[in-house]
Amino acid sequence: MHATGRTRGQLCRTRPTDLVFVVDSSRSVRPVEFEKVKVFLSQVIESLDVGPNATRVGVVNYASAVKQEFPLRAHGSKASLLRAVRRIQPLSTGTMTGLAIQFAITKAFSDTEGSRARSPDISKVAIVVTDGRPQDSVRDVSAQAQARGIELFAIGVGRVDKATLRQIASEPQEEHVDYVESYSVIEKLSRKFQEAFCVVSDLCATGDHDCEQVCLSSPGSYTCACREGFTLNSDGKTCNACSSSSGSSATDLVFLIDGSKSVRPENFELVKKFINQIVDTLDVSDKLAQVGLVQYSSSVRQEFPLGRFHTKKDIKAAVRNMSYMEKGTMTGAALKYLVDNSFTVSSGARPGAQKVGIVFTDGRSQDYINDAAKKAKELGFKMFAVGVGNAVEDELREIASEPVAEHYFYTADFKTINQIGKRLQKKICVEEDPCACESIVKFQTKVERLLQALTRKLEAVSKRLAVLENRVV
Image 1 (spheres, rainbow, N blue to C red):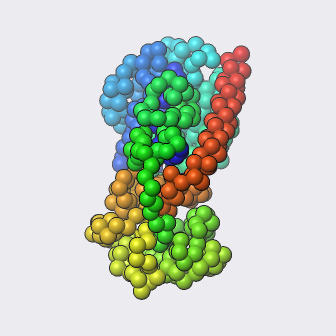
Image 2: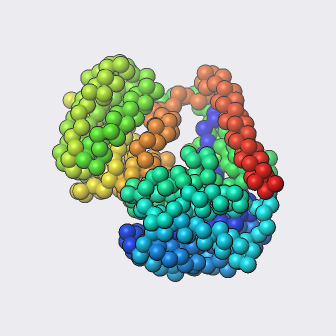
């Protein structure tokens, strides 16, 4: 059996919730940035089961004053909600965050505005989005909100006062505080809230899946697998009988790393750890994996070519010793260098080996990337694109190989790139023959790990439900 599969989070159900967005539209939030906030709101709403007996949504808009854009009782359908969100306009004055939270407590979550009675079956949630330091106090009103059973999430943007976010948010704060460097990437947080509102359900048990042979459940999602003697197809759900042939496991891997000024020295150190995290998983040798490294900013610099180092220890030492270029962001020129130089025989590449490029960037390219990105894919290079912070999603998609969704990754914060590293590890190298005995033996271990992860998640959800019940009592 072969345990590779895909997550189907879109099939999860959302529990009934009274949800109020509390949105900062003060002078510091430019109109184009406020449009990004509206996109974020819409993406979260898209994932909800909206209705009078399901989830109700309200929006509070604030600056120096507070304006209720629409109450919880106003819209009974998703389509109506989305139209109402599109009509919201910024207020463009001061930043009275405490006043806005107080309004949410006394008005937005009142029964006259459509909020339902406190119950273990109905969650009350407020999501506060702000980009600045409030001109009033938030600590006391946030405590009042939580005492009334309202779960508070705080999203900060740009130069926001992070201490304020912590004062607003419910516990545990690591689950209730989020930060992005700019409004251009705030919509990336929508996935987190889509998952947060998802009710745990066993989609395998309910039959709400499309696995051909084996369904492995996890909270709100599942992965597909195949019985012994079969392998999983690229669609993630159907199976094929094993063949006796096995491909080469030789991989030539080149990292193409953004060393521009916007990365900053402390984050560049995290990037180096990210590279070494992946190197740790490789079988480095002349016959298996070779690693090369190229850094770029306003210019391109080869740190070391394929085949120069023959052990993980030497590669990791070279990565740690790499100096930071700290200039512009010429991603197009760097891609062209990779295409023209990095995978040539003279640079250590091996005929017949799989060619893999990992492009890491934190911002918009200052030159044209399309031609070089297209050429890399035409030459058969397997290209992964990793973006952080202000990286542009369209550029990441342009770089990534097909299927694009499996070859590009994004995170808002450099501190979480290690999570991308874990996902990349599973995709870089040619897999061993899944029909070989070793793979079959290992399948049981993989299933056990999945079941252990499921058990941990269910325990966490049970604890969270217990907390909500205690609030009601």
